[in-house]
Length: 418
Ligand SMILES: [Zn+2]
Image (cartoon, rainbow, N blue to C red; front, side):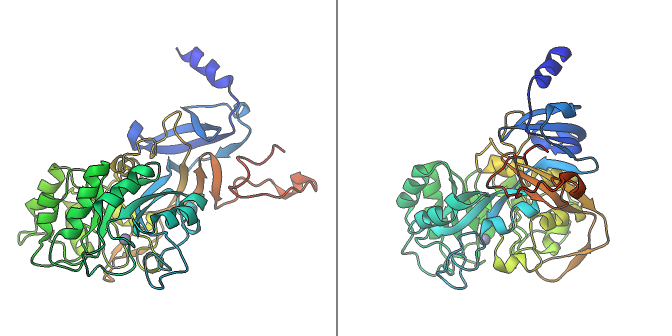
């Protein structure tokens, strides 16, 4: 078998080979093993213990780096418009390409910034024009997240489901968020839309009111596969008087409800997360709730959220799984989040930074870091989309005055051969 395999490899001419990195690809059960990864026409062409340099147009030395699938951030706000000052469907959102690739993120899931009245605008102005892969949850409320939802009037399960079915390629779920009333209308309408379109619902519970306790959300209103984001938010009951995790959280997990970090500007408390993770109860998915407020506060970005999980004792491979393959499964996009041969070549290369640091939650509580991933390089569909340490550059002296213009992800797969 082996000689045939090697012959097949040698017959190919790869665009790029990532050489000697320590690969963590949870879907394929590759956990910190050294592999070469070859890329051809935007896809992963081979993952092998050794691929010859001569087979590749370009080789990147990945020794000492960790190589993972490109991250999937399950909760962001990227409906950046000039409308709606101070709103998530406005200038609280950020243009996706400004923070994605430099943090190893290749797929962002916008969590209901737009609703059924303005999703088409979001699609044409952001989704279709971003180099980052942007997928969306459509808000059950007509205009999405302009402000907190104080009324029921504009929920429309049928319209949301119709839109989701028309744009199956980019719509991966439904969102309910920031509902201020004591009834379940927002959640139940979102679930009704999710049933019609057969896609998951994500709930940002927002206001914790005695009339609608959180445990009822997890055990009675959400379906298996639906997502509760902001799961470590301060008002969520996590730990009983004996220091143990409340049983309703375990029951929720047993019935398949997804518990998502969704750090955000004010929704992450070590007080809840530290004892939960110490008891081996990890988040299903790690996500940022990225917006203008959270990115410049203690959330920062995906690698910082992942560093917090690491610092609390979650193993590195579990952290990578919760940021790649698991979110892909949650949004039913199993073509993403792994490094299988034939898969889309969305890949991130990392250096582990062990310098001393504190990591801080939404309430200014701190714990010591145990390593932070720093993104060295990101590939989006095989193209170099981020190159922090100039690995794709050529020694100044060797160019002998032959100056072409190096362009970004728009226009090349790898620079022309020297
Ligand atoms: Zn959010």
